[in-house]
Amino acid sequence: MSEFIEKVVNGFNKNLGGKEIDASFKFVFPEGTVLVDQSGAREEDGPADCTLTMKSETFIGLIKGEVNPAKAFMLGKIKISGNVMQARKLGELLG
Image 1 (cartoon, rainbow, N blue to C red):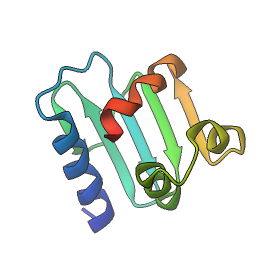
Image 2 (cartoon, rainbow, N blue to C red; image 1 turned 60 degrees about the horizontal axis):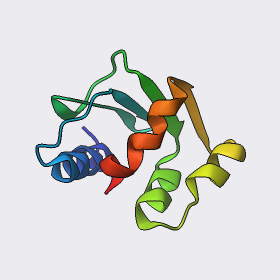
Image 3 (cartoon, rainbow, N blue to C red; image 1 turned 90 degrees about the vertical axis):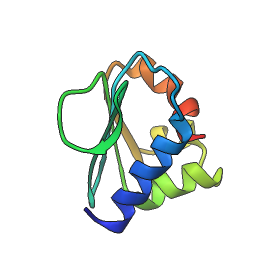
């Protein structure tokens, strides 16, 4: 597991902190794939309700509040597939 993916997994699990989520999310980065569901976050590639594909730099910018998610989506820096409405719940996951 790359250091970046390990930090993403640990960050998601910390932010979830026992919260119930009713959807599954897959984050696809050049470094690997992270699946987040009711079981928590882990490095895994599997089916998900909503899949987000982006560069690690974009994700870091989102976390730091330096990247506007809507603008990044419209500029093609974030690609979303599956149930796009579930992407609105990501604020809880990102902290």
